[in-house]
Length: 302
Image (cartoon, rainbow, N blue to C red; front, side):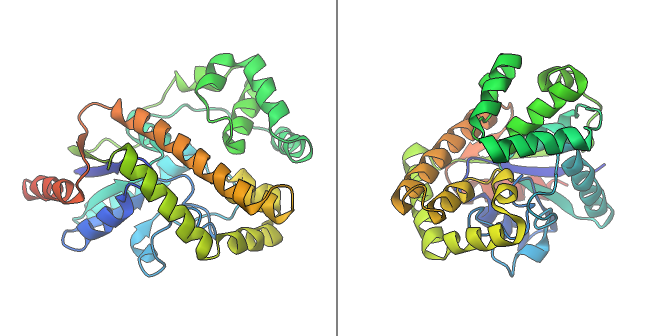
């Protein structure tokens, strides 16, 4: 296998812009490592690259809302894309903030048995009819250790944990402790971390939120809900869509939706920062230019 670049950091740090800039002057293959960019139609709220750039990215717009897309599926697809890039003489650049995807790809994946369709559909029906809170409480009772580290506001994560426990009798954490070989074992890896700092990042997140709202994010959410159903859109786990649909239904105000989205985004950024800062060997900088120079140095040695 060949060399690999990995670009990580919290949401709104500017990772996609930096990756795109790097790809303009180097033989790179852009691969998204973001669990929300895989969904077609979730464009504004997930801050996808502009439409004219997306054809250059792998693993963006690959499934419809409501369709399952696991870490295992990401590993299979990402590994194939990277191998194709190496064959073509290009260096894959994995870019994204979903640490679980990157960990599974490069360190190995738990081989959880297939989940019965009836069980999965039953849990989703419970969530649609009774909300997420009772399911979170069930998870806390059955697997408190996993519940403590899980994003309990993300329906897809909660449902996944419950279905694995119900289907196998073991918690997801126990399965994750028994990992397979990595899907990808590159010859050399350079990890780059882009983090503009807490204060700057907070400002960037708020500016991006307001820009997305002004561009019609609420209309996008409602249009997706008409096509796929509100539950399927919310189940994707992308921050903001459930809140905007709640506002559209009159259950909360537009101002309350905005505040809730901003709070969830800030919490998500903190979790990302904690996850990635714990990784050894990441070259961190607040300056995209410094990271671009480090990437070019790496490529020059190949």
